[in-house]
Image 1: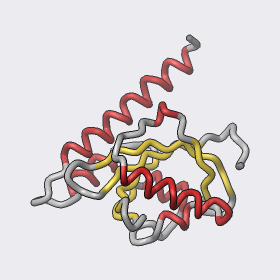
Image 2: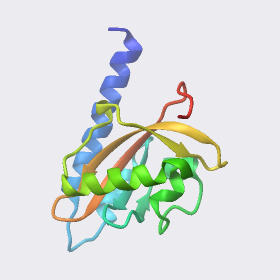
Image 3: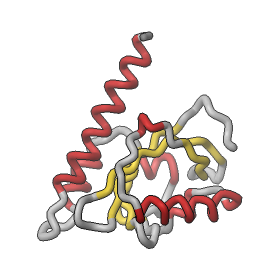
Image 4: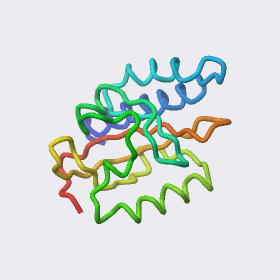
Length: 148
């Protein structure tokens, strides 16, 4: 295995573990502050999303760098090219009916709208936060992919 693939695999595992750690750190009494603190440590774009409504609850600096402002309070549909929004809405609802973590390594690639209103392809990892309807989304921009 080439060195770059090995490094990427290790980095993906570490970030996936970070999402799992953030999910496990959630304490209803303390709210999302601990989770947000963990997400802030990631160089990869990460958000906490209300899985039912699609509202973005928290986002780290890397997410703002990729998607621009505002994010918190906005709906996920803002990040999806218009021609893909209906399909994304169906996928989101299906995911919420069957809450199973989807790591980045699952290669779940989707089109996204960037802060300059251009399009890119991103790989998404999803980690549900136990006992809530919240989901941690990890987003990795795939620079070598053309939008679909």
